[in-house]
Figure 1 (spheres, rainbow, N blue to C red):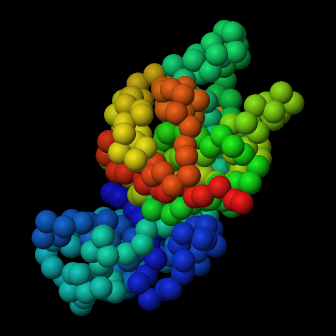
Figure 2: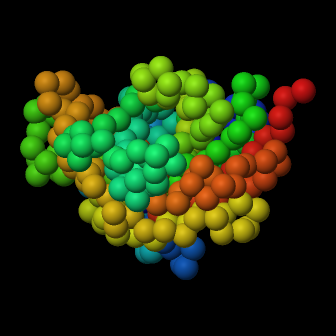
Length: 329
């Protein structure tokens, strides 16, 4: 199944100027269904009500609802091609609406937490080679990560503001995993059952500031915390194997990354199991995979410029598209 968070047409908000976190109270969780040859968004709360059931209105609530809510989503997807959702006709504009008639927000506008890993070996190897170093042995022994800012989440089609503190703005093409269930001290096999689904992630980076931060040996912070982009949808874990899919990035239509995810040293299940040792993991936690091979300007030498459009695409997930804002005066 595919899930999205959308902005109802009745809400008049300038999406280009506001983060998904700010808009989250107005966003509605939906499941994507196919009906009459078109993709349709079915509002999960209203759709559940139409068939005599109950479901939350926001994506975090959907994830926390577990199997009971997922069963409702499956039932709505099953009924959509029949033209009726209980007493509601399909495509009525309230309970269900055409995918292209609404503004999408980040599918999970308010993650419970945000971690970003470093899982793709080709990317890691190139990064250390640029510094004249080999990959350190601990990288092969544990899935290292840093913690990001879960309150600076942007969604599809929004403008990414250019921070005042950087001259070198870069994208990073990543996958992201969303935790579905609370757990602690999990094995990798157990952790696999705690994964809700996957989406695309653009880990925006201020490279000039990042170079300074990394010299302090605490990892990146301000150079990453200003914007993380998620979307366009979440694909449930039972419908997508992310171990080997094609991923592409385009800047103003020009392909700058064309890669695959088959060199992942650490699986998402292993990442989740590692984090869960000695601490709880929670529904709505988001884990970035780290950058895919050749998946950023730092690798191929093409930094972003004001006014450009950056598109990330992954098989089975779709296209995450954003415009880069102008440099502040």
